[in-house]
Image (cartoon, rainbow, N blue to C red; front, side, top):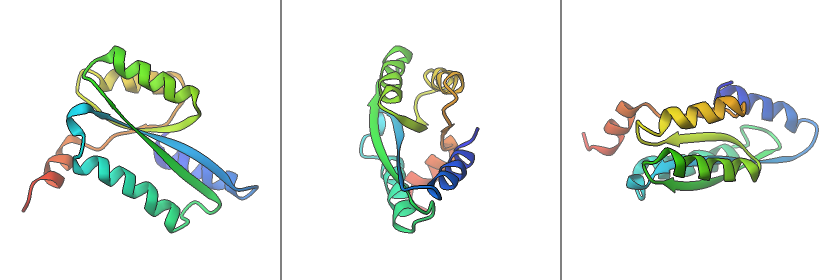
Length: 125
């Protein structure tokens, strides 16, 4: 299930009653202060501000991990146990398949920006 499908499901649930859902932003430590982290936070803010999901309010939790599958898995499992319903991950090439596998196994929607999009977003024209 993709993130868009998950957001559509959350929107359908909101018709019944107001809901709050947590989205995890999982990033490499090297991305602290980078535009991709700010864009993630801002996108959650805009979804809530524009009430794109009706009565659903999204909260985000941003976590930074080392380029280690074990460290990333620890953070991911900790966040999942706290009720995270979707994951936005921008992690190193070694860690990404592991995150994808855990999310698939737990049936948690996961998405990531394509690496080329990040290159264009961080360089001036």
